Figure 1 (tube, one colour):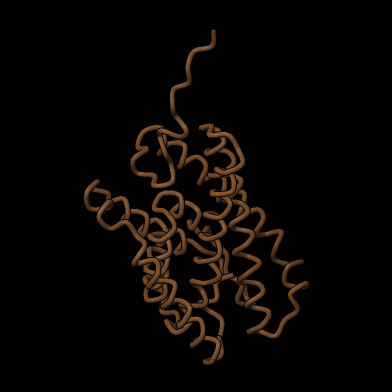
Figure 2: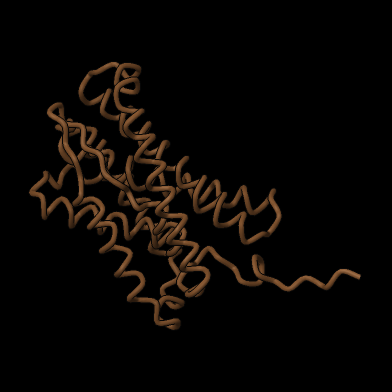
Length: 225
């Protein structure tokens, strides 16, 4: 559910913009800008933003205002890392809002539900998997890149539906019953796409993926006796 196209009360919009400003200030301080420049990864960053813009532009919109499309947030969270992914999501959503002549005042709530929530969910799940599961290449591709992406899309959907129910004064249970089946299918598609792309990246361009550590996932094990 894209809240760029739903009327948001001024008070709620103000609070979401305040949250956006605080979070992005933290992200700007934590982002590894020097690593981005030193490793010549600026084009990867720009490419990730353009990819999100394209995904958000390929959308379908129903008569009641429900808009669904691939998010791309899990992918940029894995490629760029948490702080830079949050900043990139805000930039991409701003460009989409301007291109589609959506009210920019509602950008913050759209970013919080469809940017912040899936990115933080993905990053939290990734850290949990890295802590409790063995450092295996297939754990990264199938569990982190595929399964965790699907969960992050579900979290973003629930967050946006909850916000929509508050803004539009509609029952959350009814909204979930109608739209979750659609989003589950979209989530599987996004998980499959993200898993495939991340597998290609870590095989051919592992230095592009900030969350992939060669020493952890591809370390050589001593031969068995």
